[in-house]
Image (cartoon, rainbow, N blue to C red; front, side, top):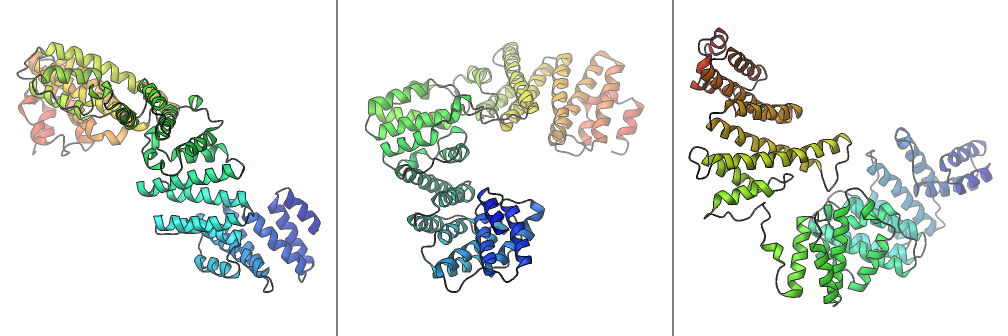
Length: 527
């Protein structure tokens, strides 16, 4: 029976082997060999543990009992290994949010007192140091890596140790402070360099991608400069080639920015190695890239400045996000912002343009017709972006190149520009055009649910107000009916009393066409 279990272990069918050992113990409860064999199985299984969620608690309890029963007082090396795996049971319980009743640190200190060089005690304790409460610190990183170094020095279970070493860094150091992320990246680069020198098996594609991500989020390259001190430039380039082997960023949806980031890193390392002419050519090639992250573009510009003594011409060009306002010629400055800003960004210049043109509506220094032409072109650009985002959202394919945040920014820009658009039409006494714009805004706000409640109330009130104004002008009963309908909609939705609408506004002179209407009188009675 035990022979069948051993065969299943070789086939990595640990649950089935466990069941056979349980049956063997029932047949011969006092067999030391069977209990020790199940103890060894427990260790192998724990190092590759998978189980259904509803079975985890009971299985881990059974494995823990088996390990303690297999402890041997006459073999300190075996005792250290067994205690290390007993600690790993508790670590798995922590990771799966199951109760822990044992002091995990104490277990590993006991294991290390039996054998300070035990590979599993050191590797698992290194993992636990970064997992346990209190967050990752530089001191914890140092302590954990010292444990992994001891584990690796034994030469045993090397791939398992590497798996724990990299997993602990990925899972419990990424997403921390810049200082921690930067140190984590440097540690990972040194690990890879060591693996290359020792001809160790290459990490899986997904694990290598995880390491590469730590250079910068969404291709921004924010940790590249700090990584330069991890290795010599030539060593770093070799590590980068090792990590990127077989990865085709061009074919990976939304990963173009990551490719630009690594091209910049190669240029930076080429510069650091003293090959200034080659580096300059690489930097200049990056100038032609159209969709790199703006943070990476700044790094490229600084690289060119270091090598040539001056920034590239593009640094002097407008970015239409946060350029200093031209106070001498503000009208053309703000027109250019509307024509060229990126609808996926809510830049300061766009906000400034809206405020400027709103202040110009009553006494414009240039014809409003010119402004309306620009707004029409800009609105068309924004609508195209929104439609692209709608299609991406429908397919659930947001990426770093076009994310949910970009989509939301485009909607907000469409809305804010639409508000200005209808104000201009009202100033020109063109209620028909103002209503058309407001209907477009209403359609947008209604499609976005409760998170756009305030904007929906604003638009609905403006529709009521403009219909009332048109009723005063044209004496059209349909406008009165629509104005009343919009006001009732606001009241029923709980919009009156919000930041946007109050009763004083509803009773204001803009609604004088409704003053004689019985439904309106009933609506405002006592208000």
